[in-house]
Image (tube, helix red, strand yellow):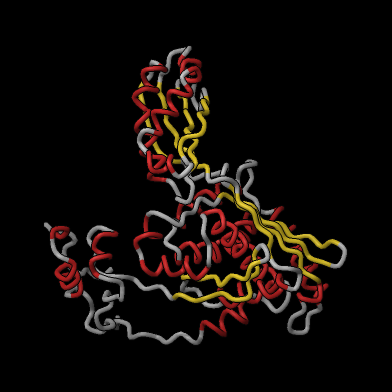
Length: 390
């Protein structure tokens, strides 16, 4: 690696954004693109969203077209740097549209906070169970606005001997309404932990949301007439058989399942990024859910039935339309407005449908001309920026 100077920058966080940017740009090679950190986002926004901000990394933002979700036309914003994903999603949505589009549902927005209790007394779990309503009420005192909107702590689940005889874990189940909910749930978990320690006779360990949001699943399905799958010299029936075989391969082999699911997250992550949602949390939950049986498996299924190809997807989708970047970033707000979603559940439905679409597109390409033809055609359009000579 080529050193760009000391990384110990005393007081860097105290500088203003412009000063930090100038300090960093001094260290760049002369051939670097001029002012690479100067994005279009308002400086005052950037400086409040992350620490040690120097600018914005602008991701290409495109619109996937042709989507029909639960009978409604939807324009789907996608922020992604990878060529062909948006085109592929649009093409897959056109295929699905030939069979009435995507049907999608989302579970109630329940998110779980975990409170770990170490060395509880033998009767600790029972005492917590007895105080269930008290604990829920205590949690709700920290989130009066959420409760007023119809949300709040809903349930308490006590799990004994989690990985060890001296570990008890309490799950605090919270209805987050239209928020992703991590901050709300973490606040509640911390608020009730002292009382749980007293009741259990143990000491508190971790208090944190779990990203395995398996009480907050989103599902999408599509039924595509075989003729709609025809492409570049391949009959629709041939493409459908190839997709069905590709799914069977993923179901049998975790090595293939990983790439199968990556194709799903190509679409999901791009929509989550565009709408200011935490794609990292959703990916973590999705991959954990894919391994819930003890073997990593595909998150979608594909089967031929009668004269159609039927696809399904189900995965945890803790998303929000309020709070975080979804609220503060003007582009994220505009993307949500463009989609016309009015609840987090509606957003989850669109996100699940998009994941199924990008999965379909990848499998259709793999089952016909191959994945690289369209991908590389679009990839070659990108200009090469000057790079530093060795």
